Length: 185
Image (cartoon, rainbow, N blue to C red; front, top):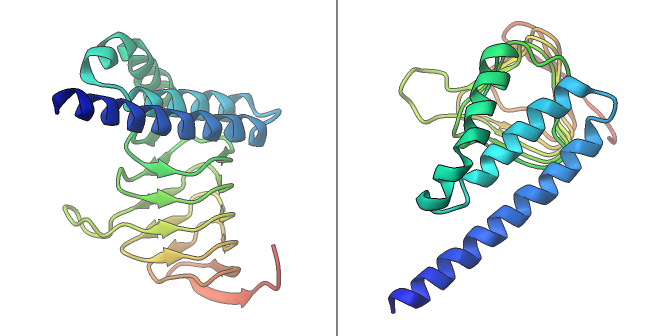
């Protein structure tokens, strides 16, 4: 019985590792010509991959997590938790001041610029946004609370978003307003 559990646990770990590996390849392609973005997503994905293994193996992968903490968090001032669920194709431009809550779910092919904050509206609550695929964030935009940002949405620079944005919606401004719905990506 115990052996079956270990086999199932190992196969789940391998599948999760494989998903993160392919997400890393997508991230690498998405950040072509952007060295800082590549370093951020490379160390993030490697750190996420290290979470897929049992504690005994994670101990030997600790240098990756330390490199992530030191290089990405302290030198580049980017705070993306290794527990955040982020789809492949993540593009990070500049990155300084980027903060993403650990419970946030972000879809594929999203673009994050400097100063973007995605998190909870009130301290201690678990109300965090869910971000769709192909969403683009302008610099210094803030997305807070239990809201949904639809696929293909654009969040303008400096926008404070506290209400859901529909699919292909464009939102900007302080206490953002949906200014229009685009016809296609």
